[in-house]
Picture 1 (spheres, rainbow, N blue to C red):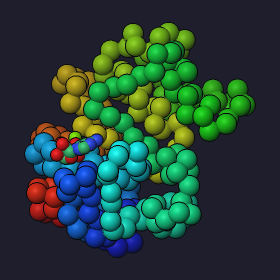
Picture 2 (picture 1 turned 45 degrees about the vertical axis):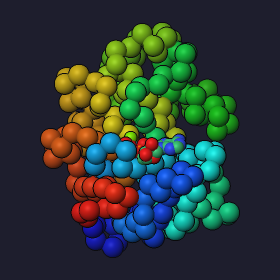
Picture 3 (picture 1 turned 180 degrees about the vertical axis):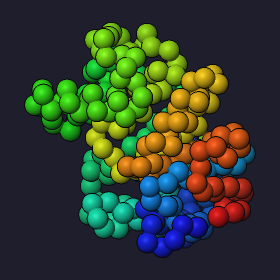
Picture 4 (picture 1 turned 90 degrees about the vertical axis):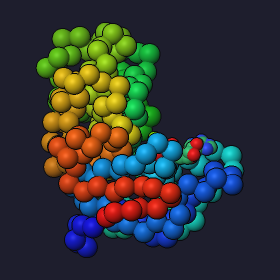
Length: 235
Ligand code: ADP
Ligand code: MG
């Protein structure tokens, strides 16, 4: 467990079920700020579910229900993200997510990264350009794409597409980044770049990453949580 002052996410007595299938049982844990926490464990143990709880992505699934509390330190204060006063659009801006399979939108590289800005109402073109460039640099992708920003993003390699998705998640300057097996579809070289990137990103962002690769966890993570039978078996 991280020292108390450095806690970004506090999970208290969290239970979660899809209809009758209870996936997480009375979890209490802390996630360290500005560090990489790896969530590991066999398939089907609720790793992806736990990530989806941190940005409320599960809420539209019929029959899914949650008990317990999740507080995330945002804008200088702990917020109960399931309290009715918590704004979902604001939460999603501050807690970004990247999935296992890169999912670029069918549009240009530039528009992919600018997309969340558009949704959040940013209309100043210069601000948009600067934010896109910053995010692409942060995602270690700028040098490879700066001359082809208006090409279709689906022409990029798998590793580049995943870094693009990371740039898209970073463009709104989230405080937390959720990564669900971000390298599992990538080859060794692309994986290495993404790992370097993750280690750099924790300077500005709290990272929670699901991984099934224990060697990767050793290389990248500061803390590890193992989920088994709905519980955390180490902290
Ligand atoms: P992991 O990421 O560790 O492989 P998941 O969180 O994806 O595990 O899944 C945990 C359990 O919840 C599994 O039994 C899975 O079948 C079930 N599950 C996951 N997503 C859904 C869903 N959308 N609807 C119903 N059950 C689900
Ligand atoms: Mg999963």
